[in-house]
Image (cartoon, rainbow, N blue to C red; front, side):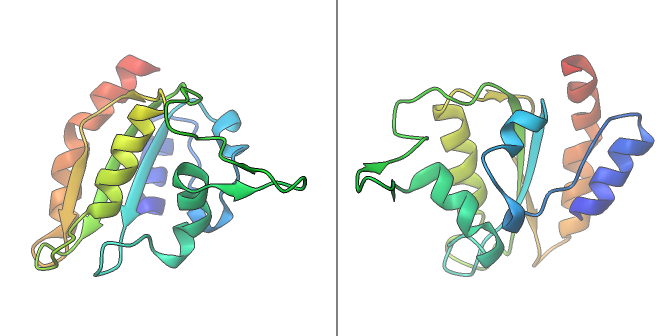
Length: 147
């Protein structure tokens, strides 16, 4: 889904790149101007294995070489200044449907990122691709205004 979305963006003339969150580093935020996150979660609502580094960066503290704990994304810091959109992928029959998408959406806004387009959700127990097609229908116009 993410690569197809990226390919469509490129066909529309957008300089786009698909980045697997397994390859995430904070430098990614310096390399692009607009971010669209397509996020799945486990049945328990946890981040998927490939997104654990991204989760740690956004939400968790880390210990630096001098033994101090720090988080570049500490609560209240407004370090992210980019437009974003989130589309959460999941299965509505699970209790924690789209928990990762909701958490990332709220956290990005808390950290100063600007909402480009409304958060969307795709339900795998229904028609996930259809949900995504409906969501992105008006996304392109919002992106066009941003660029």
